Length: 340
Image (cartoon, rainbow, N blue to C red; front, top):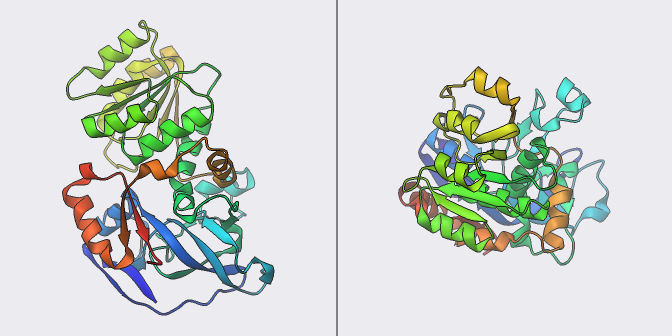
């Protein structure tokens, strides 16, 4: 079978790999579509401390079950599915309290084990979510990024009428924007430094789109909220230096959701946090959000295809990676058509 394999940082190709056989409790997926994510780029650049090379990457994908291992109902063969990449142990403290996405022994498909940039891949049967007949496989491949958005918003515990500020209008920022609307958060402000991204955010229903390179974001938020500040802030830019500004822009009792893995320390004013009684939450991957996302897509509250800017064949992935490295502003979601 053909697969995109990262052999070492900056060393990758599409090559012939052995066809896997499903083990106990596993299913074999004939992959149809897979999305290229920023974290895939981090693996390619050697910026992911968890990955072990060589690795077939890809954690956003959908396809069809073509075989099952022992312990799996053979009736599942032929199911159209999308894959939750979070594989947890079920025994550690986070798992025992219902937080498997921070399992102490967690594995991520496409990081710790082979992923979806391949014609076929094994996954645990429990991680393969059956799709409604009305949901196309290309849209289903993007359930995973929406699950990231659903997770961070749930971690911030929105109240009716809350306003949301999203910092960063890349793919994750746009999924948060769409998911916020699906969850009933109507007033969403989004910021970025690229007008093309902000135009897309406006088209997707952002109430206000602010170019931070042309306008003072803090001043704009101050004016838009009559000085009260923002209840919800989602950091989809993942720039540690932005944290002090987020603390200042948050209103009393506000909640800030952090998504980045950047190890650079952030300045944090304890006074600002305490006087406003702010809540800062981390959000990693997703905590069983796939059914929620699938339901929103099926109901038409989310539009995954609006995120797709490029479609490429598996064999053209090296060129797509080069494009994302050199001109990332030209792309939103690059979708790989594995079966083409």
